[in-house]
Length: 45
Image 1 (cartoon, rainbow, N blue to C red):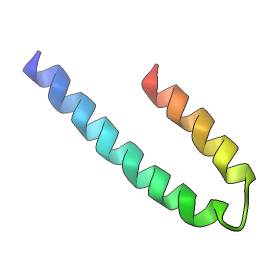
Image 2: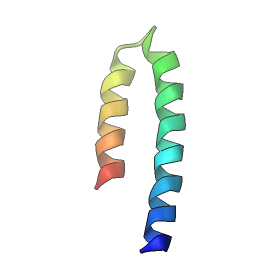
Image 3: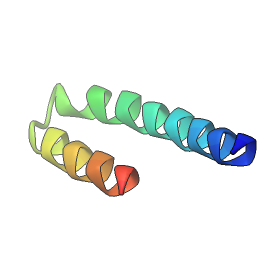
């Protein structure tokens, strides 16, 4: 259980970093928002 939590936290941290990167892009490119959303759902599965 502890290992699972650690793995999830690492994944979530990486995801947050990706979202920040995407947010910088999507201010110029709204399509990045869609791509970011899809990426987010893939991570969650």
